[in-house]
Image (cartoon, rainbow over the protein chains, first blue to last red):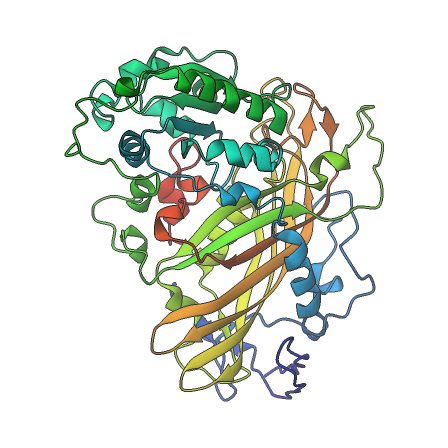
Amino acid sequence: MASIEYLALKRSGRGSLWVFRLLVFVLLAGTGCSGEDTEASVSGAEEHWVPSQRVLAGKSPTRGPARQWTPSDSQARELSEIGLSLEEANRWATFLQPTEQESVWDSVDWRLSIWEAVVEAADTGRPLLLFSMNGHPEGFT
Amino acid sequence: MLYRRYDFTTPEVLEAIKNFVPVAVEARSWQGSFPDREKYFPGFLDRTGLHLFEPEGTHGINSLVGLFGFRPDGTLLKEGLVNSETTTGSSSSLRYLNELLLLWNEVPAEERGFPGLDRTFPNPGSYWGPAAQAPGVGPNCDTPDCSLSLESALVLKSFTRDLPRDKDQPSEAGVPRRKDFFKDTSNSDFLLVRDPEVLVPQVPVVGSTHKWPEWLVTRLVRFHLVDNVGGLTMAFPVDAVREAKVVSLVTRVTDQAIEMDIVGVTRATTRSPWGLSQSRPNELVEVGFATEIRGQARWLRQEKLFDEFRLTAIGNRWGGTPQNRRAELEFLPHTNDLSGGPIGVHFRLFEGAEQDIVAPFFTWEGRGDPADYWSRGPR
């Protein structure tokens, strides 16, 4: 059996710091298409990937976004060397989401049905404005 | 995405739009629907004249992109403002909207409606409808993905952006990489899981890990961890998935809820079968996307749904696809950003109305194979 230690970090917004030390078995039985669990007292037949301690602890020789590299399978850096922590992920989450100005688009009440828009336009005496885009303007464009 | 950023960012444009009933459509599906006359109110399509539009150039069925103004009965008010680099911008949009309003004000009051509108005419539904039926999967589909209902589904909206870079590196082709071109650009998509309980351990034990189903992680890596920052892109083929591991780590269990951290690593890489652009179809490059994932979620045990779900994938991308502008020598601005850079994708719970949900991009006709997207089969 192999075991890892899972070190939980401070949970943002919770106001409390807690640390677990437990044993996790990395071998377990894998079955079909459903999710698979590990439990502290269960051993199984198939290997089940468990994040390395380095990954969980967010330790990394380089902080911030990964540097660029020349891509090839043999040259790609192991992601476990980068180590994304939960705190880092939450900071990037803020960066990745649209700003207030970028969200101006969403402030327009776009209808997604031409049929419904036609009926509304006829009822309210307004013209139709149709925005057509490669991909969907309300999603992936 | 470019046009959302440029075209609708000023209060004046927003104010002008209030005079219209605005509707947003997917260009390919819209143009592709013209032969299906029965989807439109009788006479509507004829009055637009757009069904006579002949696709030109390399964009073909994607040619009708931009803004179009109509009377309610479909009569085109003015030739559309078709998006291009030279017309994109809020000033262009505002000018066009004002021109439409002037033309509308000249329409006699008795012609501003839709005479003979048949309200019993079948509503073909929004663009969610067809995709929700997962066409291509088949009538005997026996997975939850065939269901039309979103009532208990986990619906996530994703946001993709380049991460900050130190400086522009000169490219070998003499074309600047133009990292600034992508700097303020982002794109979105929807990801949904109709049976979200697959992400939750049946017997939750604090400290235990629950492996995500392979079909779901594969779907995530192939279709959602993709470089769409600069525009449309391609999904990874199944054999491009080199690493796809995501687990939920149970951190807290109560009678009401199960709280989990989410951890994962992903990597997809392939020798591009798509070429770099319509003008460079034979240039095949390696395309890749590698990330590390962290997130958190909370599952309500009685309600059987997630009331908190956020997931962030941070990593690198490299290569380019025909329309994502990483190697653009056809349309301005020219870019050459193939050697890669940091990128991130964030997924959060979608809390809007169900009618505002757009089906995942790669389920759309002409954009991907829905049966492939919804597949839960082995890789």
